[in-house]
Image (cartoon, rainbow, N blue to C red; front, side, top):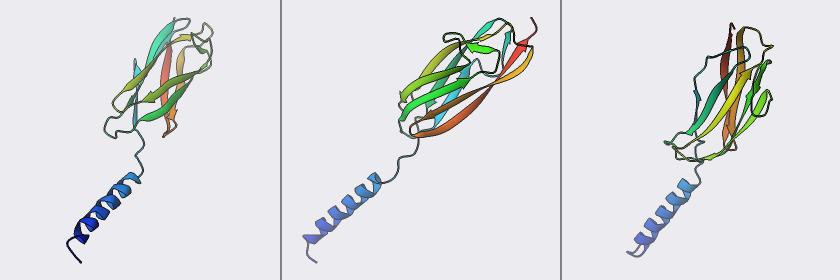
Length: 143
């Protein structure tokens, strides 16, 4: 083996390492879901409350969360005010590492709802992340 073959062997080793690193799967992003105000929530019959939903992409993994969307399902006796429905599709879009996307909603407890505890569910998913479920507790207070 001559002196000329050593740089060739080093170059081939570097190329092999680079190709190997590129073929490793990129880790899935990790999302943090925040509610403001946090659960449990309280409201009186016939009144409304505002809910801010924030989805933050963990900056540590350096992976972009793609096509992030959510679905909020309210219990019977509650509606999301802007669409007057008990379910609401939320589009958060693509979220870069360290960034967040926010959604503000107004939820109304109808006059027909009884006092007590209710549960709503929020599911957030993306094209490169698994679904994550969040349970929201809502207490209807005496009028």
